[in-house]
Image 1: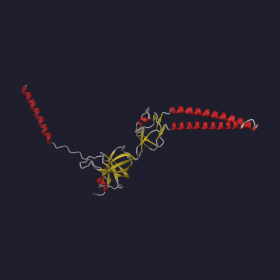
Image 2 (image 1 turned 90 degrees about the horizontal axis):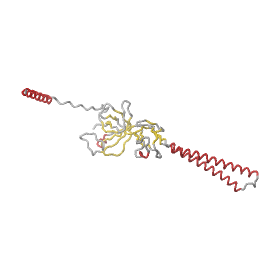
Image 3 (image 1 turned 120 degrees about the horizontal axis):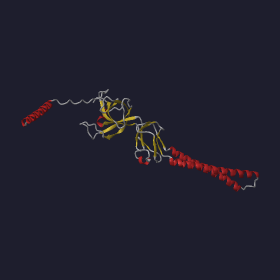
Image 4 (image 1 turned 45 degrees about the vertical axis):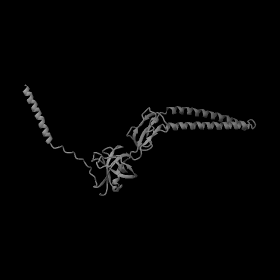
Amino acid sequence: MKLSRWILLALFSLSIGMVAILYGELPPPAAKPILQPNLPFKHFVYGVGTVEPSQQIHPINPNHAGVIQTLSVKVGDAVSKGTELYQLDDRPLQAQLQVAEKTIALKQQQLNAAQHQFHFIQALKQQAEGAVSEKDFVAKQDAVKIAQQALEQAKAAKQVIESQIQQTHILAPFDGRIIAINCHTGQNSDACLSQGVMQLGTQALTLRVNIDEYDIPRFQPQSQAIAVVQGHPNLSVPMTFDHLEPKLYSKTQLIGKTTERTDTRVLQALYRLTPPKHFPIYIGQSFDVYIQAPAK
């Protein structure tokens, strides 16, 4: 029995050794080739681009602080200028409006009474010249003017409250897309002032391309250029040059090449993008950018 155990153990060890030898003789697996995009030009300047709105992202805050009552949009929605984005709680203002309307009604009654008294004393004066003194006549006349002014002030106060109620409805100042919502229903808008209750960006997209300072002499802004989705060389987007920022910036976006220098400065060129229909583009997404250039 002991002998058979030793034989089985020896055979098991031998099989393990043979498998190890055979595995060591196998050729290493072939490296997966890195796919290169099919570029329409032979010589190019390479850069890395980041998608951003064509205009700066705008925080959308109310003119006056208040509790958020309703949110009418969600992140990613496309909105037109004038679309309601959210509404603040207007119940305190509605209560003030009711008081203002009652004040207007009271001032109107006071004006009616003052006018009635003036018309009476005016008619009396016309019937009998000495029946009414000049002092009483002027006093009644002034009372009408004062009542009219009080009524106008009450109406102006109502208009102010109505304007404040309208301002509780926060509207989109331009056509764009909702980038972020930083407050929720029931929160006070003051809690989100630093980032904005909402952030609105334009629907048009811009690609900010970093071009190494060593490639600047070969860079031609009006040359043909394409942006390729990183890791997907078959997905590309044509670009149209917009403008340059005439200043070099420290390079902060590294591409991982062994020859890359971290102290390099970059020129930033901005291109207009037309979002394709067959795949999405998101703000903050990075692209490999190829810009046609003369041969070195």
